[in-house]
Image (tube, rainbow, N blue to C red; front, side, top):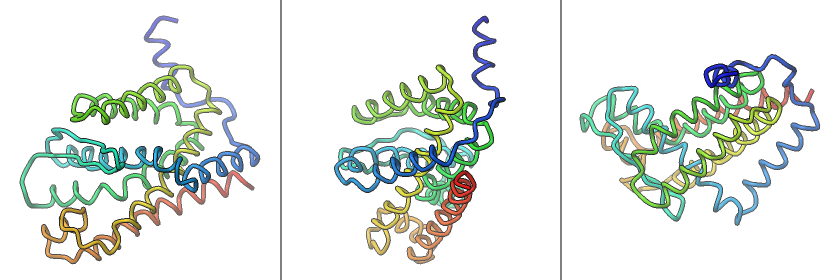
Length: 235
């Protein structure tokens, strides 16, 4: 095949049986929860949750007409994304709100699409987002994380294995959903005005606790969708 045929072949939905067996799902579930539960491992790998959080701000910001100018990931695994536009108004509110729910919603989407044969197309979309964001990194650590993420997703997409892609997407989805709850727990009750709930409170005069509750509801929706997909596979 020429390069265009190869590209199309890696974008098409899976045509074979990619349904995960119960044994495979148990293995993926155990491995994913182990990543989140082991603190030394989590301290390193939670950067994936932070990355999705910051790109959630960026993607939603661009979708509502704001300009994404840069982002950083820090050594303590926190981060910051900058979108430029009106300092107040619905666009600023929506883009600020998008961060905390993003890992849970993206994680649930991963599992849902993987179960329907769309893992390859989803991974291709992730690569596009990473490439767009790559030119907006503003620190060496951020660049390193982005290059590792691009190398991993690029290899997974190019050397296509439908079952492996589905397994890794489900596993990553579980890590993102559980990680979203851990990040939300860390900010719940915070009086830091520079946190997302604090910024939203200053923009709207709605108490930060209400915004935190809205994050929790979005994370709960993602968790429910993920649980349905996992439990269906375990039957």
